[in-house]
Length: 274
Ligand SMILES: [Zn+2]
Image (tube, rainbow, N blue to C red):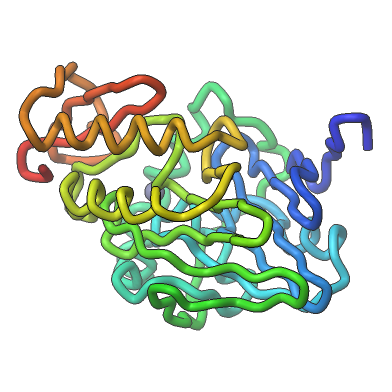
């Protein structure tokens, strides 16, 4: 471990980012977090499940642990089957159906390997596809107690219907999945709700007291400014004052999208999803 608390385990880049919190970067695809109390720990998301994440977790902690998912997308739940059961909002359960995964996995993998930030191909499991796992439901304001640390579930429908964030009130940390990130928030395909539900949920979230936001991709931590800029961006989209630029997400959705930006935030959406 060097002075940035960085280490590499099974090809994953791991960094301790707060007391009892580790950010685990899965080969440039997604960031998952291990959050530990004194008695238990939780893994927040499992990435796409490309490598031996279980070994990473069990290298970092001896505590019993369980899996919490921020939403149902395959780059967040792909590794769930390696842990047998996982919490996921019921509104996103349809996204982890085996039938859906079987039809989309090879396209996802091909695209992922071509991303400029992708690394770690040599650590990937061979001929692997995410499997079934026991789904446990999440509900709004549900509390998980780890001993000396608690996480509260807050629902943020928008990017997906079942998107949630996990709030560590005592330490003022928010684990945000794809709901508050510095990359574009995607609200345009058949699995998203709409910008209005997202805006309403973000305004509720803004009433909560937290300082650092740990998202599922790219820069982390980020601050509340990104949340405020997202609220502003969503508001401009809803009231028709947002500037739009065309954007090509055809590899992710059959529906066309445009992008609007405000400050550090951007939202990709289309008319059907305002
Ligand atoms: Zn997502």
